[in-house]
Image (cartoon, rainbow, N blue to C red; front, side):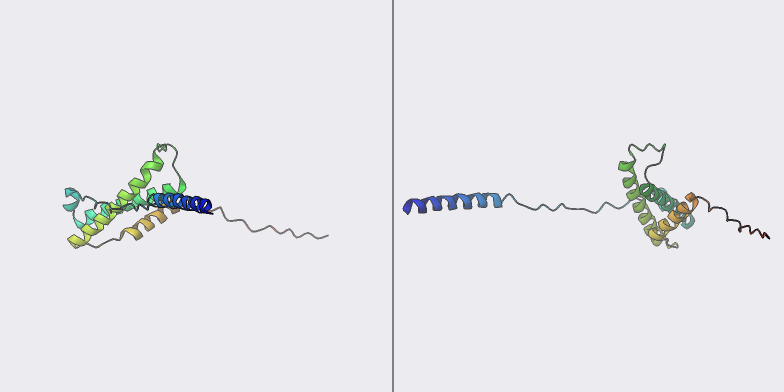
Length: 149
């Protein structure tokens, strides 16, 4: 009986030491996600009038809408599409950050503020409307033949 108890004790100690040594191996690492730095507004942006800022804002909204559309549709032929999946998301993030910076600049200067989200949606709807094929021509009414006979 003593031999069996010693064997059980040895097995139990081996099992517990193995479990304790592996317990430290399981750790959860949470990456620290830092927000991106604010978009650097250029001195030329700061010196623009309210209408200039609005024009720059509309241009950035148009670019962001195009990038969103191209990401949804896929790479365009002749656009250098081998780097497209890598470059387009980064460019879209940069355009969104530029829109936010221009909206803040509009607030700071006391201009009429355009919001980035609705502006991009509006430009995307314009883009999708211009890309859609024209509707088919109307179908002529059926011809009814009256035959007697």
